[in-house]
Length: 151
Image 1: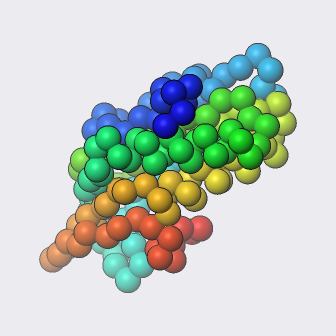
Image 2 (image 1 turned 30 degrees about the vertical axis):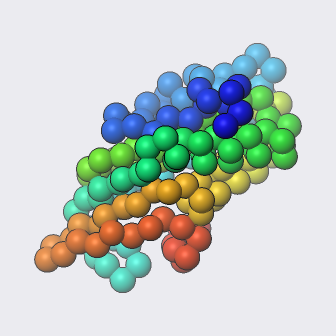
């Protein structure tokens, strides 16, 4: 993990404070800031009536993986600040499960870097979710094999 990016990643059971993330990427040089939030929805591929999700991760490993992704984004785009957060534990419908905030001088870099961070986080971070619906529950690894990433 790049020591300068260590503070840019939070994986916690605490609710994600999206406003605080936006404030954290604030910079007098920034002309743009993008915030992406992923929220718990009431359906998944092949399932309806999702009532809630549970998230688990390998503590100590997941933060390093996400920080590596943040470092890659800094190296690839001319951005000023990046923050990424993922929530663990039980989350209800419409709760924010993941958020990425990026600032840059111009909007294109913020959009591209934010998209990269969330896409790579979904592919590479060791995070699992358990989907609960009436009559069942199932653990699902959130990775590239999930065909619902762009929806």
